[in-house]
Image (cartoon, rainbow over all chains, first blue to last red; front, side, top):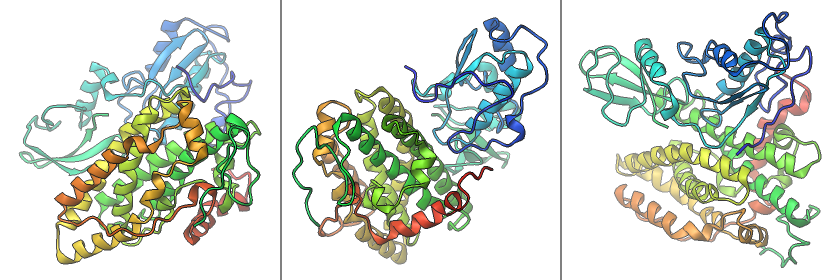
Length: 186
Length: 275
């Protein structure tokens, strides 16, 4: 099911429009340089996936939006994304970054839709994404014992339910004493 | 507090206050209901934002700010949808920043002042426990957009309820002072709980269509959950007080106006301001 923000294709020279509580800046509304790749108005799905896998998550830049599992559908003229948390401010930045990347790759005609259902879950983070998180020092979401991303010990404890972003909690390793972020199960 | 005047349905379906023109028909009822859902989240999100930089510890500061973020996210979705349903070109921002007190439809509980940390946590627990059950029911709403928002938000609110319950227990079962403060906080907030279960004509009208959830369906579960947490905190249930109603019809406490002054000042002073 598709809800809410069904956006029309962006106008020429216009990036992401002003969102509800948008953090968009003047520069974000400027179109990126002249496209070189496929003609405007559509393209192959595989090529669009390729573009999206180069768009980093603004809060956890080692992950691409594809690793994060928020890209729910890619069609020749449409990309559907879903927010992680309802109020996550990164959502608007992500949409803008995807717009910029699509424009730069020549896909100005591809519109971006936000869908809410089914709701995002951390189960959609790809196996590669989980490895990247661990290598970056963030424990990937788990339903079993939380392992320290530094030393691998499961002798760990929660320090704070919330960490630096809505999706993370703050933990501490009781063996190597390092504090670390845990990507919460959601 | 005056009771709701009898209303003929569906032509007079409304939750409007004394100074409002009733919005007739199903679309008007849905709009009103979305305002209730959105305003609850918006007002509580703004309240929690007041703690930012002032909480007792950095971990608590993060928690409260993240609760606020979740709630403002919910408010954005509900109010944007309300604007679509209304069809007058208003979006979530317009509804949030360019309505006055009488037009707000939030329950009175969420606009109550933060008080101390115990009072804030008492309010949070009583509200989140209700909101989670509401969203669990609304996830099956006949309105697909409401169902999608509720299903997503329910996961976040479950976390709010859990964390707030832990604080109620920790403070209630803590020192003499923390216990006294939690008792005072619960006493302040308990008066506003019955309003959460008020089912007026508008709500029943939409509940019959499967769009809204009649809170009577989860009242027993809610009361059991609250009783369980209070028992674990070693606290007696707050003494029965006269319920205070009216928020759903725009009759608010004095506190909401002050909150709106702070929240709406900038967009009202500089209407087209952008970051």
